Image (cartoon, rainbow, N blue to C red; front, side):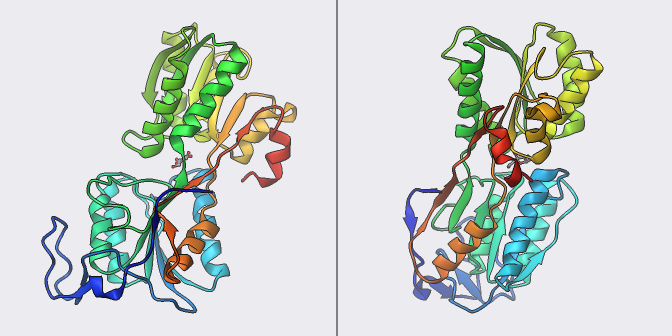
Amino acid sequence: MTVSKLIRPIGLSLCSLLLVACGDGAEDADKDQQAVCTELPPLAEKDTYKVGFAQLYEEKGPWRDANTASMLDEAEARGYEMVFDPGTSPDPAEQVARMDALIAAKVDAIFMAPHDETVLAPSVVKARRACIPTFLVDRAVDDRVAKPGKDYVSYLASDFRQEGVLAAEWLIKDTGGEANIIELEGTVGSSPAILRKEGFDETIAEHEGMKILASESADFNEDQAYEATKRLVEEHPSVNVIYSHNDGMSFGVITALEEMDLVPGVDVKIVSIDGTRKAIEYILPDGGEKINVVVECNPKFGPIAFDTMEAYAKGEEVPLRVNNVDRVFDKDSAQAYLPEAY
Ligand code: AHR
Protein backbone atom coordinates (compact mmCIF):
# COMPACT_ATOMS: atom_id res chain seq x y z
CA MET A 1 0.00 0.00 0.00
CA THR A 2 1.20 3.52 -0.72
CA VAL A 3 -0.01 6.64 1.02
CA SER A 4 -0.74 10.21 0.03
CA LYS A 5 -1.78 13.12 2.28
CA LEU A 6 -2.60 12.32 5.86
CA ILE A 7 -5.65 13.16 7.90
CA ARG A 8 -6.02 13.08 11.67
CA PRO A 9 -9.45 12.93 13.30
CA ILE A 10 -10.66 16.30 14.52
CA GLY A 11 -12.00 16.87 18.00
CA LEU A 12 -15.63 16.66 18.98
CA SER A 13 -15.74 20.46 19.12
CA LEU A 14 -16.11 20.59 15.35
CA CYS A 15 -19.27 18.53 15.59
CA SER A 16 -22.07 20.97 16.29
CA LEU A 17 -25.16 19.95 18.14
CA LEU A 18 -27.78 21.69 16.05
CA LEU A 19 -31.36 21.13 15.13
CA VAL A 20 -30.96 22.41 11.58
CA ALA A 21 -28.60 21.72 8.73
CA CYS A 22 -25.76 24.14 8.05
CA GLY A 23 -26.67 25.29 4.54
CA ASP A 24 -23.50 24.19 2.76
CA GLY A 25 -25.34 22.92 -0.31
CA ALA A 26 -25.90 19.38 0.96
CA GLU A 27 -29.27 17.76 1.39
CA ASP A 28 -30.96 18.65 4.66
CA ALA A 29 -30.28 16.31 7.56
CA ASP A 30 -33.27 14.45 8.93
CA LYS A 31 -35.26 16.80 11.09
CA ASP A 32 -35.35 14.33 13.96
CA GLN A 33 -31.58 13.93 13.92
CA GLN A 34 -29.94 16.06 16.61
CA ALA A 35 -26.25 16.06 15.72
CA VAL A 36 -25.06 17.85 12.61
CA CYS A 37 -21.34 17.65 11.96
CA THR A 38 -19.89 20.48 9.94
CA GLU A 39 -16.49 18.80 9.62
CA LEU A 40 -15.17 15.26 9.44
CA PRO A 41 -16.79 13.36 12.34
CA PRO A 42 -14.52 11.58 14.80
CA LEU A 43 -14.98 7.91 15.63
CA ALA A 44 -14.98 6.82 19.25
CA GLU A 45 -12.55 4.06 20.20
CA LYS A 46 -14.64 1.02 21.18
CA ASP A 47 -14.30 -2.74 21.60
CA THR A 48 -16.74 -3.37 18.82
CA TYR A 49 -18.52 -1.36 16.12
CA LYS A 50 -21.70 -1.37 14.13
CA VAL A 51 -20.53 -0.69 10.59
CA GLY A 52 -22.42 -0.35 7.32
CA PHE A 53 -21.28 -1.43 3.87
CA ALA A 54 -22.96 0.11 0.81
CA GLN A 55 -21.67 -2.07 -2.00
CA LEU A 56 -22.09 -0.94 -5.63
CA TYR A 57 -24.86 -3.47 -6.15
CA GLU A 58 -24.99 -7.24 -6.57
CA GLU A 59 -23.01 -7.12 -9.80
CA LYS A 60 -22.52 -10.64 -11.13
CA GLY A 61 -18.97 -11.93 -11.17
CA PRO A 62 -16.05 -13.15 -9.09
CA TRP A 63 -14.44 -9.73 -8.57
CA ARG A 64 -17.46 -8.18 -6.83
CA ASP A 65 -18.15 -11.44 -4.92
CA ALA A 66 -14.56 -11.52 -3.61
CA ASN A 67 -14.78 -7.84 -2.69
CA THR A 68 -18.02 -8.29 -0.72
CA ALA A 69 -16.76 -11.47 0.97
CA SER A 70 -13.54 -9.75 2.05
CA MET A 71 -15.49 -6.92 3.73
CA LEU A 72 -18.04 -9.19 5.43
CA ASP A 73 -15.49 -11.80 6.54
CA GLU A 74 -13.19 -9.18 8.03
CA ALA A 75 -16.04 -7.55 9.97
CA GLU A 76 -17.00 -10.95 11.35
CA ALA A 77 -13.40 -11.81 12.24
CA ARG A 78 -13.17 -8.60 14.27
CA GLY A 79 -16.50 -9.22 16.00
CA TYR A 80 -18.21 -6.18 14.45
CA GLU A 81 -21.88 -5.95 13.66
CA MET A 82 -22.18 -5.45 9.89
CA VAL A 83 -25.25 -3.82 8.36
CA PHE A 84 -25.29 -4.93 4.73
CA ASP A 85 -27.92 -4.97 2.04
CA PRO A 86 -26.36 -6.16 -1.23
CA GLY A 87 -28.74 -4.22 -3.45
CA THR A 88 -30.16 -5.64 -6.63
CA SER A 89 -30.44 -2.79 -9.10
CA PRO A 90 -27.67 -1.09 -11.05
CA ASP A 91 -29.69 2.12 -10.74
CA PRO A 92 -27.49 4.38 -8.55
CA ALA A 93 -30.65 5.79 -6.93
CA GLU A 94 -31.09 2.42 -5.24
CA GLN A 95 -27.61 2.75 -3.69
CA VAL A 96 -28.55 6.24 -2.50
CA ALA A 97 -31.53 4.62 -0.71
CA ARG A 98 -29.22 2.04 0.86
CA MET A 99 -26.94 4.84 2.09
CA ASP A 100 -30.00 6.56 3.60
CA ALA A 101 -30.89 3.32 5.38
CA LEU A 102 -27.39 3.06 6.89
CA ILE A 103 -27.57 6.65 8.11
CA ALA A 104 -31.01 5.98 9.61
CA ALA A 105 -29.62 2.84 11.30
CA LYS A 106 -27.05 5.14 13.02
CA VAL A 107 -24.08 2.92 12.22
CA ASP A 108 -20.71 3.97 13.67
CA ALA A 109 -19.01 4.13 10.26
CA ILE A 110 -19.85 3.52 6.62
CA PHE A 111 -17.84 1.87 3.87
CA MET A 112 -19.11 2.64 0.39
CA ALA A 113 -18.18 1.56 -3.15
CA PRO A 114 -20.06 4.21 -5.16
CA HIS A 115 -21.54 3.02 -8.44
CA ASP A 116 -21.81 6.51 -9.86
CA GLU A 117 -19.29 9.17 -8.86
CA THR A 118 -21.77 12.03 -9.16
CA VAL A 119 -25.03 10.55 -7.90
CA LEU A 120 -23.52 9.12 -4.71
CA ALA A 121 -21.42 12.16 -3.73
CA PRO A 122 -24.27 13.90 -1.80
CA SER A 123 -24.80 10.70 0.23
CA VAL A 124 -21.25 11.05 1.56
CA VAL A 125 -21.99 14.63 2.60
CA LYS A 126 -25.24 13.49 4.21
CA ALA A 127 -23.41 10.83 6.26
CA ARG A 128 -20.86 13.42 7.40
CA ARG A 129 -23.65 15.78 8.47
CA ALA A 130 -25.17 12.89 10.42
CA CYS A 131 -21.77 12.53 12.14
CA ILE A 132 -20.98 9.16 10.57
CA PRO A 133 -17.44 8.86 9.17
CA THR A 134 -17.38 7.37 5.66
CA PHE A 135 -14.56 5.40 4.01
CA LEU A 136 -14.68 4.93 0.23
CA VAL A 137 -13.57 1.56 -1.10
CA ASP A 138 -12.87 0.63 -4.73
CA ARG A 139 -14.59 3.55 -6.46
CA ALA A 140 -14.30 7.33 -6.07
CA VAL A 141 -16.93 10.07 -5.73
CA ASP A 142 -16.92 13.50 -7.31
CA ASP A 143 -14.59 15.32 -4.93
CA ARG A 144 -15.97 18.72 -5.90
CA VAL A 145 -19.09 17.66 -3.95
CA ALA A 146 -17.69 15.31 -1.30
CA LYS A 147 -14.23 16.34 -0.19
CA PRO A 148 -11.53 14.03 1.19
CA GLY A 149 -10.62 14.91 4.77
CA LYS A 150 -13.85 16.86 5.21
CA ASP A 151 -16.73 14.72 4.01
CA TYR A 152 -15.01 11.33 4.02
CA VAL A 153 -11.98 9.98 5.83
CA SER A 154 -10.09 8.05 3.17
CA TYR A 155 -10.38 6.47 -0.29
CA LEU A 156 -8.92 2.96 -0.59
CA ALA A 157 -8.55 1.57 -4.11
CA SER A 158 -6.37 0.39 -6.93
CA ASP A 159 -4.63 2.94 -9.10
CA PHE A 160 -6.86 2.39 -12.14
CA ARG A 161 -4.81 4.66 -14.38
CA GLN A 162 -1.67 2.72 -13.56
CA GLU A 163 -3.50 -0.53 -14.42
CA GLY A 164 -4.09 0.86 -17.92
CA VAL A 165 -0.44 1.91 -18.17
CA LEU A 166 0.74 -1.56 -17.12
CA ALA A 167 -1.53 -3.24 -19.69
CA ALA A 168 -0.19 -0.95 -22.45
CA GLU A 169 3.45 -1.41 -21.45
CA TRP A 170 3.11 -5.19 -21.51
CA LEU A 171 1.45 -5.08 -24.93
CA ILE A 172 4.02 -2.71 -26.45
CA LYS A 173 6.79 -5.05 -25.31
CA ASP A 174 4.99 -8.18 -26.48
CA THR A 175 4.07 -6.86 -29.94
CA GLY A 176 7.14 -4.73 -30.59
CA GLY A 177 4.84 -1.71 -30.79
CA GLU A 178 2.64 -2.99 -33.66
CA ALA A 179 -1.00 -3.84 -32.89
CA ASN A 180 -4.54 -3.29 -34.16
CA ILE A 181 -6.61 -2.98 -31.02
CA ILE A 182 -10.27 -3.10 -30.05
CA GLU A 183 -10.84 -1.65 -26.56
CA LEU A 184 -13.84 -2.73 -24.48
CA GLU A 185 -14.44 -0.19 -21.74
CA GLY A 186 -16.17 -0.62 -18.39
CA THR A 187 -19.26 1.18 -17.10
CA VAL A 188 -19.58 4.67 -18.60
CA GLY A 189 -18.68 7.32 -16.02
CA SER A 190 -17.11 4.89 -13.53
CA SER A 191 -13.61 5.68 -12.26
CA PRO A 192 -12.06 2.35 -13.42
CA ALA A 193 -13.45 2.76 -16.96
CA ILE A 194 -12.29 6.36 -17.27
CA LEU A 195 -8.82 5.81 -15.83
CA ARG A 196 -8.05 2.41 -17.39
CA LYS A 197 -8.76 3.96 -20.77
CA GLU A 198 -6.75 7.08 -20.04
CA GLY A 199 -3.67 5.19 -18.82
CA PHE A 200 -3.72 2.71 -21.72
CA ASP A 201 -4.53 5.13 -24.54
CA GLU A 202 -1.96 7.70 -23.44
CA THR A 203 0.77 5.08 -23.15
CA ILE A 204 0.22 3.50 -26.57
CA ALA A 205 -0.13 6.94 -28.20
CA GLU A 206 3.66 7.21 -28.02
CA HIS A 207 3.90 4.30 -30.50
CA GLU A 208 2.78 4.94 -34.06
CA GLY A 209 2.20 1.26 -34.80
CA MET A 210 -0.28 0.82 -31.93
CA LYS A 211 -3.71 1.63 -33.33
CA ILE A 212 -7.10 1.62 -31.62
CA LEU A 213 -9.61 0.53 -34.26
CA ALA A 214 -12.63 0.89 -32.00
CA SER A 215 -13.31 1.65 -28.35
CA GLU A 216 -16.71 1.37 -26.66
CA SER A 217 -18.32 0.42 -23.37
CA ALA A 218 -19.54 -3.09 -22.62
CA ASP A 219 -20.42 -2.07 -19.04
CA PHE A 220 -18.03 -4.57 -17.33
CA ASN A 221 -20.52 -7.18 -18.51
CA GLU A 222 -19.77 -10.55 -20.15
CA ASP A 223 -22.89 -10.69 -22.34
CA GLN A 224 -22.44 -7.15 -23.62
CA ALA A 225 -18.77 -7.88 -24.38
CA TYR A 226 -19.80 -10.98 -26.34
CA GLU A 227 -22.21 -8.95 -28.48
CA ALA A 228 -19.75 -6.09 -28.97
CA THR A 229 -16.94 -8.45 -29.98
CA LYS A 230 -19.05 -10.15 -32.65
CA ARG A 231 -20.00 -6.83 -34.19
CA LEU A 232 -16.65 -5.07 -33.84
CA VAL A 233 -14.53 -7.95 -35.17
CA GLU A 234 -16.82 -8.12 -38.19
CA GLU A 235 -16.35 -4.37 -38.74
CA HIS A 236 -12.57 -4.47 -38.11
CA PRO A 237 -11.21 -7.77 -39.46
CA SER A 238 -7.59 -6.61 -39.05
CA VAL A 239 -7.92 -6.67 -35.24
CA ASN A 240 -5.23 -8.69 -33.50
CA VAL A 241 -5.62 -7.47 -29.89
CA ILE A 242 -8.65 -6.96 -27.65
CA TYR A 243 -8.02 -4.92 -24.50
CA SER A 244 -10.90 -5.45 -22.13
CA HIS A 245 -11.26 -3.44 -18.91
CA ASN A 246 -12.14 -6.50 -16.81
CA ASP A 247 -11.98 -10.29 -16.78
CA GLY A 248 -15.75 -10.70 -17.00
CA MET A 249 -15.77 -8.95 -20.39
CA SER A 250 -12.75 -11.00 -21.52
CA PHE A 251 -14.80 -14.18 -21.02
CA GLY A 252 -17.44 -12.81 -23.40
CA VAL A 253 -14.68 -11.92 -25.87
CA ILE A 254 -13.32 -15.49 -25.79
CA THR A 255 -16.73 -17.03 -26.46
CA ALA A 256 -17.36 -14.66 -29.36
CA LEU A 257 -13.95 -15.20 -30.96
CA GLU A 258 -14.26 -18.98 -30.76
CA GLU A 259 -17.68 -18.85 -32.37
CA MET A 260 -16.09 -16.82 -35.18
CA ASP A 261 -13.41 -19.51 -35.63
CA LEU A 262 -10.68 -17.24 -34.31
CA VAL A 263 -8.20 -18.53 -31.74
CA PRO A 264 -8.17 -16.29 -28.63
CA GLY A 265 -4.63 -15.67 -27.43
CA VAL A 266 -3.19 -16.39 -30.91
CA ASP A 267 -5.24 -14.81 -33.73
CA VAL A 268 -6.43 -12.15 -31.34
CA LYS A 269 -4.40 -11.50 -28.18
CA ILE A 270 -6.40 -10.72 -25.06
CA VAL A 271 -5.29 -8.14 -22.49
CA SER A 272 -7.45 -8.14 -19.36
CA ILE A 273 -7.72 -6.61 -15.89
CA ASP A 274 -8.69 -8.13 -12.50
CA GLY A 275 -6.98 -11.45 -11.67
CA THR A 276 -9.89 -13.85 -11.23
CA ARG A 277 -9.07 -17.56 -11.02
CA LYS A 278 -10.76 -18.31 -14.34
CA ALA A 279 -8.77 -15.63 -16.18
CA ILE A 280 -5.49 -16.77 -14.66
CA GLU A 281 -6.25 -20.38 -15.64
CA TYR A 282 -6.88 -19.17 -19.20
CA ILE A 283 -3.31 -17.83 -19.33
CA LEU A 284 -1.85 -21.25 -18.49
CA PRO A 285 -1.33 -24.19 -20.91
CA ASP A 286 -3.97 -26.32 -19.13
CA GLY A 287 -6.50 -23.51 -19.61
CA GLY A 288 -5.72 -23.17 -23.31
CA GLU A 289 -3.57 -19.99 -23.23
CA LYS A 290 -6.59 -17.96 -24.35
CA ILE A 291 -5.69 -14.85 -22.37
CA ASN A 292 -2.22 -13.34 -22.80
CA VAL A 293 -1.98 -11.02 -19.82
CA VAL A 294 -4.02 -9.95 -16.80
CA VAL A 295 -3.23 -6.80 -14.83
CA GLU A 296 -4.29 -7.26 -11.22
CA CYS A 297 -7.04 -5.29 -9.52
CA ASN A 298 -7.08 -6.63 -5.99
CA PRO A 299 -10.65 -6.87 -4.56
CA LYS A 300 -9.65 -7.92 -1.02
CA PHE A 301 -10.15 -4.65 0.81
CA GLY A 302 -11.45 -5.98 4.14
CA PRO A 303 -8.23 -5.99 6.22
CA ILE A 304 -6.91 -2.60 5.08
CA ALA A 305 -10.37 -1.01 5.27
CA PHE A 306 -10.92 -2.01 8.90
CA ASP A 307 -7.28 -1.30 9.87
CA THR A 308 -7.77 2.21 8.48
CA MET A 309 -11.01 2.65 10.39
CA GLU A 310 -9.43 1.48 13.67
CA ALA A 311 -6.42 3.74 13.17
CA TYR A 312 -8.80 6.67 12.66
CA ALA A 313 -10.67 5.78 15.85
CA LYS A 314 -7.36 5.77 17.75
CA GLY A 315 -6.58 9.27 16.52
CA GLU A 316 -3.70 8.12 14.35
CA GLU A 317 -2.85 9.80 11.08
CA VAL A 318 -4.78 8.20 8.23
CA PRO A 319 -3.93 8.70 4.55
CA LEU A 320 -6.56 10.44 2.43
CA ARG A 321 -5.79 7.93 -0.32
CA VAL A 322 -4.60 4.33 0.05
CA ASN A 323 -3.43 2.79 -3.25
CA ASN A 324 -3.33 -0.97 -3.80
CA VAL A 325 -0.18 -1.92 -5.66
CA ASP A 326 -1.22 -4.19 -8.54
CA ARG A 327 0.84 -6.83 -10.33
CA VAL A 328 0.97 -8.17 -13.91
CA PHE A 329 0.32 -11.84 -14.67
CA ASP A 330 1.36 -13.50 -17.92
CA LYS A 331 2.60 -16.97 -18.88
CA ASP A 332 5.72 -16.46 -16.75
CA SER A 333 3.98 -15.38 -13.54
CA ALA A 334 0.41 -16.73 -13.64
CA GLN A 335 1.16 -20.12 -12.07
CA ALA A 336 2.78 -18.61 -8.97
CA TYR A 337 -0.23 -16.33 -8.41
CA LEU A 338 -2.87 -19.02 -8.93
CA PRO A 339 -3.19 -20.10 -5.25
CA GLU A 340 -4.15 -16.49 -4.36
CA ALA A 341 -6.67 -16.12 -7.19
CA TYR A 342 -10.39 -15.96 -6.44
O1 AHR B 1 -14.03 -1.25 -9.68
C1 AHR B 1 -13.38 -2.45 -9.94
C2 AHR B 1 -13.95 -3.10 -11.17
O2 AHR B 1 -15.33 -3.32 -10.97
C3 AHR B 1 -13.40 -4.46 -11.50
O3 AHR B 1 -12.35 -4.43 -12.42
C4 AHR B 1 -14.54 -5.09 -12.19
O4 AHR B 1 -14.43 -6.46 -12.41
C5 AHR B 1 -15.70 -4.58 -11.46
O5 AHR B 1 -16.79 -4.49 -12.28
